[in-house]
Length: 632
Image (tube, rainbow, N blue to C red):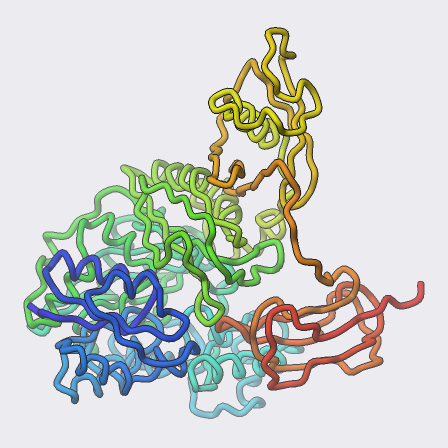
């Protein structure tokens, strides 16, 4: 067994690997950038080595520095986690050439499956069904459009070296193809250093089904059943579950068997995932499931597989990398219950899911669920990396038990003052279509603003806040000098049955009624050390205080000032000073946190000021464009 392990990653996956390594008695070495000097994974590891500046391209993506850190620390193996260099065949080979153990597949397997176009050809040759499409070497815009026209719209443009939903664009009409291609190629070049794309037929009722496979160096390959990752937003997974709802045993055998053949075709060793697209218009059927791609690494959603199989996949990775055979044979693996995972992000769904980096001042997790996180209270979500706060996994005897447990977790856990997607996750899990497993990858898009609209604290929330303030006064007599509308909460025998309380929520003044006859509403509330009351309903946490917060002023987009929502680089300016623009028209495209963000006109008007230049780095809050209203 490996004795010392360097983890070439950060955040929750680094912490996850450290936990298993510690259980196995393996010494762990973390690496960190300037931004991560005090990160949780650094604090948890036995040793930590600094590898560079905050941008990933100057630290976590510099293979030579990671190998040097392994040598300097005496680590004998490197685990890449996922993302960053995990699927970089050149890095894997460099690790091996340095005399270190690579905890991952052979570089040749990564190369074979790393480019989607070559992988599809290889799978077709191995008898694995593939989606109709074009993956040729001719990358001219005219050829690509001609192929898309021949396939028939809608089509999906995908970066051949892509992953994580980046470098992907759905195109519904021929007239939209050129712009979508340019945007896709630009994002692919930025994210992966490769702007080549392939084109696939877009399945109109698609389910995203993937199979966890595992191989060892003794020629054995097994599958650990399937996961359903159909609930997606812009090709990024939101909710994942295992096993796939509606999967009959015959279809399961067909898809899992195809996954094993796919892994065997490249002599696969280690953990991998074979991803399939299914036409679910008539339910899951073996003859309507096609290979999409292989991820030659551990997946973000691997915990749901662990929960239903009782297997620690990281332990398997370490044992296989140490030369051991797989711990279990196929007939020893079985499905137990159902597991669902939600990805909790620091982002604002009400503002187009813009990332919300910053310090986490409040973090109260309900640990009755499995929580994989890379942060603690007082830590920060950096603008340099993916804004994930945690993954939450609930396992139950069936799907409904797991779903309800996850909903309860979202209602009993708090993160602040950052914006999070917690209410969005709650809305997704509560959708009737999700509850009844009527799934496809377009479900979130069809729901539209219904999943992101927050009207404000309901009467039940206001009552819960008022009752909690009143209860804490009754328990601790903390509030007798506070201003209240009736009775001032002073003690007297003839107290009225209900009392109105002046509170502030998100800087706005509200009036809450605290009914002395019933101090419980069924909503989750908690008192913070600064006297703030947090009440959660439908995943949305409201922070109540007895006084208005002191905040810095700023110019909002409502008065025409278009501000950079976060630090980033301007990659496109679509307007000129003096140009007339329409509401919703794209003005500037910003690249930040590994994604492109379009900033649009808030109303019809004229570009009065233009302070954005292509290629420019900007900080959060920088004014980029000023739009003045046009004449009525």
